[in-house]
Length: 190
Image 1: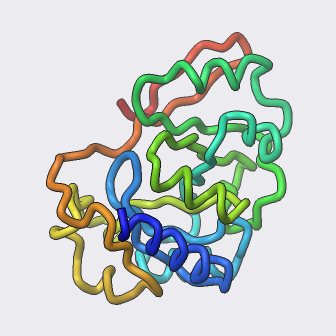
Image 2: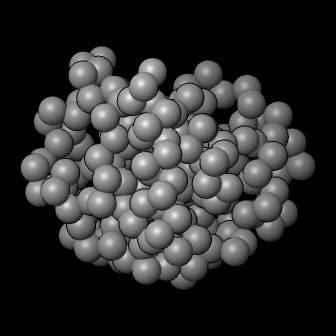
């Protein structure tokens, strides 16, 4: 667990100073930064060569944190999120407090509450939401494990986490859903 604690400390230092990190998530390896830092988010778009019209996912540590970043979510949203049995990203209308390059043109935001111990610890230490986008060049396949991530992506971040680099367990991107006013879930990506 030496890597875990050292990586958390190093990530906190880099992210608080506007840097970018390559880190393991509850799904695939991700590129991340402070989701409230517009310049840091721009670095992620540049590294991924991703059009800025394609918004990014934001990770939160706790379901209750949704209330801070979304205007008028479903009244039962905390209970709904806490019932998920797999990584699920929800698209919410009316994002609050994020820079324009994190929010979709229609004002929506994609948020996942992570259950991954590393991500949870990192976000709690940072006390800010974390950008999470797959660690690949836009349009290229998502690398299922660390060793398959493109070297240019690894070289393009300010810090690469050591924890879980040898984890070969195949992981999938999160399920992507919308929840309507009645609490019904529409699955956009299964």
